[in-house]
Image (cartoon, rainbow, N blue to C red; front, side, top):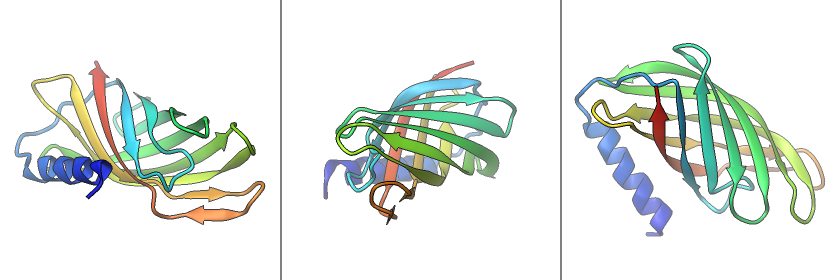
Length: 149
């Protein structure tokens, strides 16, 4: 199993076994580890909640190609401190051939109550609409963030 697969599996186990309720956070900064299949894969994640349920997440790609993404996400309670979220947005890749497209996201989000740490697991498919029209469905990710009240 590749390292991203191990990280995703461990975080999923952590999320499923959590039994305490999550504390809300206003913003968070961290790293999203993703499958290489996605054009916007491993990236810096910046997340900000405009309300209890609506967040905006910015992604800054750290691998080749350099890419930027913006997602609007709806968060809802799931089980025992875990929230599920879904949403969508846009992305652009700027190294080599410039490509732009749409991205969706669905996942699980957990904030450790006693620490300023947040974990999330997600599926973020991408639809490239410029250069080569393509759809990438294998875009799985795990994010670790430092939260800000």
